[in-house]
Image 1: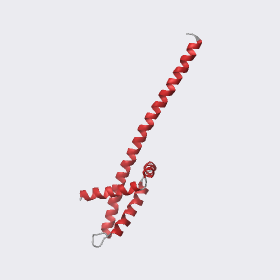
Image 2: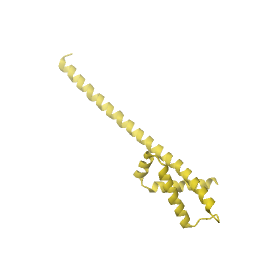
Image 3: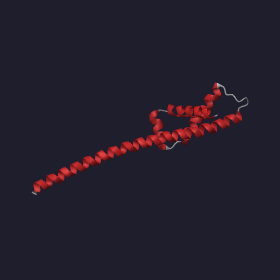
Image 4: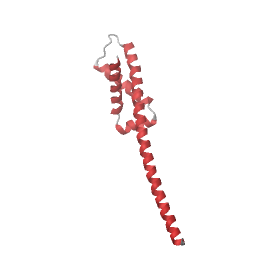
Length: 119
């Protein structure tokens, strides 16, 4: 091979290798991003159930007639939302921040509904 041909082959090989590595990096990043979001959603789901059970036990112990009015329910939801936010990892908090704080409220409401279905 001539030196010009060898140099061109090396340049072409470097370009192909760079493009291949960039493509693989994009695929890995995409898959890790999906995995991170899935892990954060699972963490949110599990933490919401734990918080709802805790708040429910506390409310049950404090309730005199066993029923809550609207104001008491709203206060319990605020408490549960605060507790949930405190329990989440930084990755899960970032996901919640990207999707809005309403995601916490929806997670709490879903956990309450699951708790009602079980009892």
